[in-house]
Length: 177
Image (tube, rainbow, N blue to C red; front, side):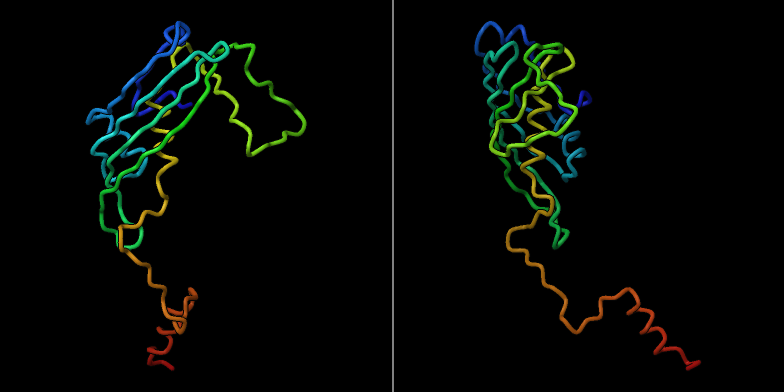
């Protein structure tokens, strides 16, 4: 988890250890501008999240849902367009020095794509809820967004796409030939 998050909304482990906690987050204009810049968006008109935290081992489990209204640039037409983004996530976090933290093995690591993600071991006693929302918003964004109805039209097959095609056309126009 990156500590220089564009949107910091924190809660301490001690608050969660007393029992379930619900939080509603809404990014203000400054936070939305920083997040948009970080994610390469034109703008973010709204970003809200509903989070439920509950004790898990000596840490916390975060169950979150977010919605956002964003403006991004179409990768086909280069026109800006508005779109909704939403997502859900479940994350488990542990405090620093937790005995429940995953132990790193020096040899081979076996990955099971169906298994739960290992918990995040945080650097301090604060859980940055805003950073988790931003991280999962980023995962929901299409890296090549298309405005509704935009279609890519491939060049015709008779077009020479080699980097030397332009040089050949210049040579044809050369009067020294």
